[in-house]
Image 1 (cartoon, rainbow, N blue to C red):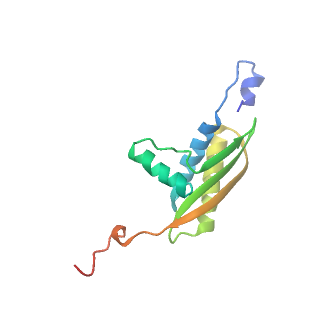
Image 2 (spheres, rainbow, N blue to C red):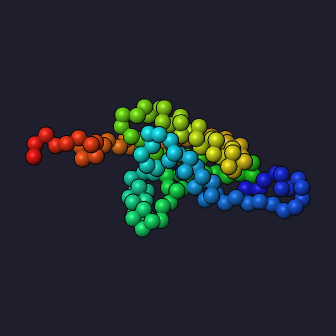
Image 3 (cartoon, helix red, strand yellow):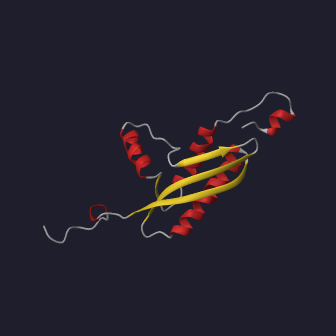
Length: 133
């Protein structure tokens, strides 16, 4: 991506790699309440291995198309149960839109959100004691 401000002043150009934009989109999506994880099943499995090695891939579950002045993003998420799926998807869109316009400085064409799964907390993680010991 080349910013227009740099070209108008003829002092050089700034190139932002697609992977950087994908990382920003991934971070913005993860910050939304109700998002459990990003990516489909295989991506999450690989992500678990990366996390164990302290090598988190913030662009996991994100695909971006970056033009000269515009960005389109596809984000795949896993939501928390019992969150409203439409509400979480819209909040992800809003968060990604703000991140791209403010941090990258480009126009957002579209943000598509795919909900791949719903995370249902297990009995072990809900904080309740076992009834029978």
